[in-house]
Amino acid sequence: MIRRAKDELLRSVPLIGKGIFLVWQAARGWTVAWGLLLLIQGVIPAVQVYLTKMAVDFLSVDISQVTSAAVLTRALPPIIAIGLFWIISQVVTSLIRWVRAAQTELVQDSIHSLIHDKAIDLDLAFYENPESYDLLHRARVDALSQPIALLESVGVVLQNSVTLLVLAGMIAMYAWWMPFLLIGSALPGLWSVSRYVLREHNWRLLNTANERRSRYYDWLLTDRNSAAEMRLFDLGVYHKRLFQKLRSTLREGRLKLVRDEMKSELFAGSIAWLGGIAGIVWLLMRISRGLAKLGDLVLCYQAFLQGQKLLRSLLESAGRIYRSTLFLENLFQFLSAKPFLAIPEKKLPLLPYLNQGIRFEEVTFRYPGSPFNALDNFSLDLPAGKSTAIVGHNGAGKSTLIKLLCRFYDPQTGKILIDNNDVKELDPSELRRSITVLFQEPVRYHTTASENIAMGDLTALGDQGRIQAAAVAAAAAAPIERLSNGYETVLGKWFGGAELSVGEWQRLALARAFLRNAPIIVLDEPTSAMDSWAEADWLNRFKQLTAGHTALMITHRFTTAMYADIIHVMESGKIIESGTHEHLISIGGHYAESWQSQVREMKYE
Image (cartoon, rainbow, N blue to C red; front, side, top):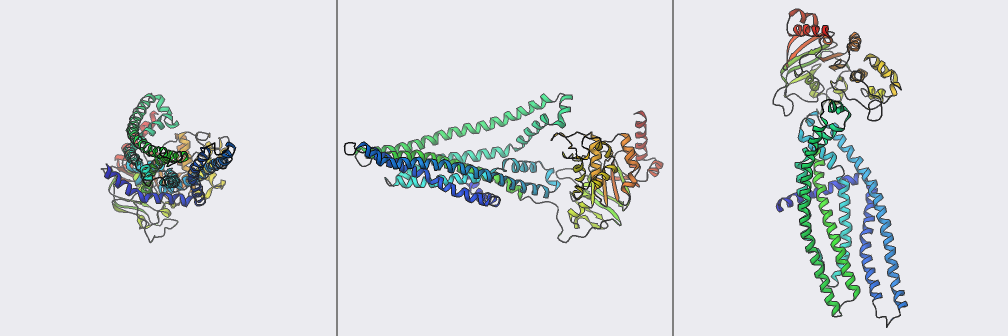
């Protein structure tokens, strides 16, 4: 245990400098002011102890030799000085609180920015891994406040060290060994603090998943999106019980840590108390022999009393520094994470339109951590300027094609070509700007309807003509215009806005996709949440909306797929049938059977 604590301590030392550098980068001026104020605050307690000694010495003289008025006159200046230094201490404390507040805000904003930049930079593969979620959780929740906590702890250590050195110098005048007695009696406390911090950190690491799961249960019980099912299926009490069981486990773990620490603190405190008593007894013996004054006893008593408190505070701050570095390691580990996708040094240009089209060439792909291939030696051509539909059962691999085309992942083998250019040789940002996608589960932005659509192309912000044209194209104009403030109505309930139906949200997302005038249009279940009237209205304009673009439509609705120029039937990661709607019906294969099944279902609806 001791060896492990030593190894952890040595490994954490460089992180102290890295953590302080984060603070320095975010708030240089405030950090300088903070350091100067701490220096002043560190000297004041020692000065007050010495002034107290002077006042006691003046007040304890033989009254028969000096009049009481003269005694008070001589003692008054140090007493007044003690009061003045107390006022200065209060002012400095208030100033430090103000400086720390400014530092905290600036540092947290800076770290948020670093975390957000890294989260944007990382690939989707990062989010496929539960360990990654644990790391991100620790970076966002546990480590976010640690740089400023580290700085505060370092500040307390420096401030207390200044005070302690001055006090040690004072008591060293009486005996060279007294500073060693003061410091040595506090060493068991250092062992207790370091042992507790290491155990607590290891406990937090082991229980990160449980912490996240408890937050998940809390979210299920309180979030609007899950409220209906919680009530319909009477799931509230069940999930509350799961939450309470998990919280009970976490609570017991924390309490056990605290109980063990309490026992260690009691032992360490007893050693420190005995050390202080030994010093005071020795000085009392000197006073009894006339070798010291009452003021000397007061000075040594206060020096030991404050010294023990300072050492305890110093050790606790050292423990907090250690704890901060352990959590900062998680932050720096997250910030050092690298994307899996390689960015080509020499990027090929991508034309604003396609000449030949898109080709999946013998592509094999498996999601991270999955034992099965989503695509196995898969090949497919998407001709330029044509609309292609891919139909198939859920899990057939249809949506995987979109993720590979957008280069959210790279296949294990094979190539994806756009106009004979491997997507790996293209700039990912430029590639994604050339593609507009309606995802199967689009994001619902809790902002105005106009801004919701503009998320498809931020250059359209403020261009109401483009936004309204996209809304008309996606059949989203009518539901938007019915809102109280039209396009300026805030949507979603997070900020007190209007709520849309599932189908209306999908039409809004479709408008967002059409707003981006990209050469490649990808639609993943574009009509899945639309009613039959809205779907019919949109499909009647499908050809016009995709004219001049290379369109890929993923759907399980054959009534939607029939409007495409080419239809591919996909099953288990492979294309099993291809052709136009009429051709596939005529050959009587899988497509024809599914078409007849859907037609029969529509008749009975």
